[in-house]
Image 1 (cartoon, rainbow, N blue to C red):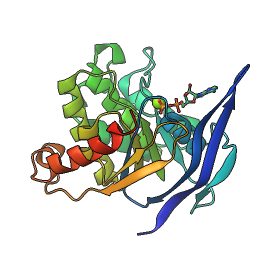
Image 2: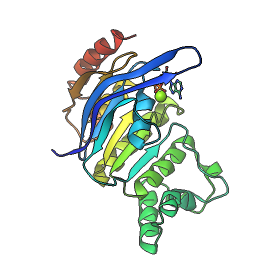
Image 3: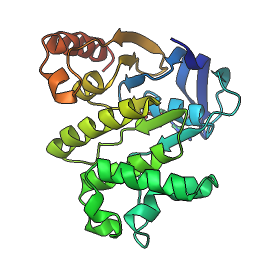
Image 4: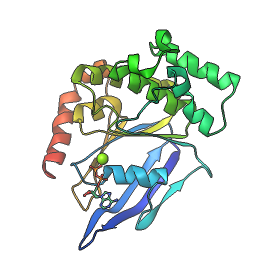
Length: 248
Ligand SMILES: Nc1ncnc2c1ncn2[C@@H]1O[C@H](COP(=O)(O)OP(=O)(O)O)[C@@H](O)[C@H]1O
Ligand SMILES: [Mg+2]
């Protein structure tokens, strides 16, 4: 499979007033076209820093990010991705299109269809305040996908949600990303979530952080719930937990 991007020997050191922190040190990783790559690692190891660098919001101290495309469209969905309360659900979902000057009758209709496909048909003209937390995340995800990104970055997108909503939304997210055929990198601190959503799971070490291990996930079943109940799930969970536990 073709690489969408390569992370080549990336390091990132932060200078603070009287000390410095090495967050990332010699991170190497290829991201393949169409895959969902899940990244887990100890808190504070540099996962968000790595996504910021990929998104171009932060610069590495060393190394580089090499994209296969000259000007890739990157969509970045944050943990508490706010919707604007004075805009309708539809007008929130089209913000990315507006910013990128890609808003047209066709693109808005496509967004409308996505909202319908993901159970939001009755809320298209409503204000976000009338939505549940899981619904808001679905709108945020439609907004991220609407710009047809080459790469979708998600930084712990479900961490503010309760357990059942997380399970439910992770099902949607998996389905939406797979149907769109997009490449996605998702950070999570939940091992089960990483295994059930990811095509590969990357475990980062504690600071200074590097790639500790990579797992190919080949579980039976198309849905997150099926994958969670497949035979190999627990085996993978324990292996990955063992890797992480070494780092805590
Ligand atoms: N702008 C910054 N200035 C100083 N230190 C930072 C900055 N951003 C992140 N850090 C530090 O770098 C480390 C990695 O942070 P982060 O990437 O947010 O970790 P993670 O997302 O894995 O929890 C942390 O110790 C954090 O405090
Ligand atoms: Mg983080």
